[in-house]
Length: 146
Image 1: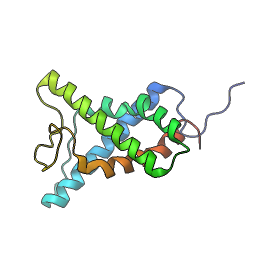
Image 2: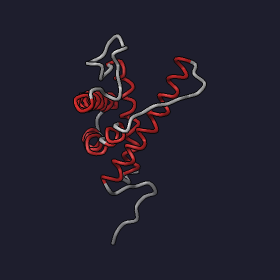
Image 3: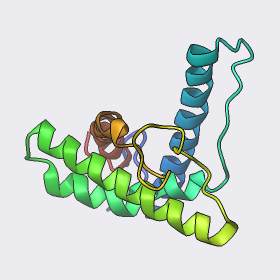
């Protein structure tokens, strides 16, 4: 007898990949619009993203979910640090791959004082740690653990 799924549970890995891709896109559109408003006071609230970002955010399913499961009993500072390192590694590797394919990455951090090949900003480490910790709840909801 099959158990009844919880309200937002998604059994398929492909389904969760799609949810992470969509959530990532939404977060990016929201954050770029708010960032530009805060920085430039642009009342148009224009946002931007790239089609490349959907599969990059979708990588949370095969890469983040197992990491979260392995780190569940660790302190938040350890989990957050591991998530930030992982996100920054994916950011670097996917940025290099896309740059190799089409000549440039969808993002460019060369304007920052400190960056790695224009693909990673170490200053974003705390942000990515926080995102990783926030995604724990999303992962648990999507897999029916809550």
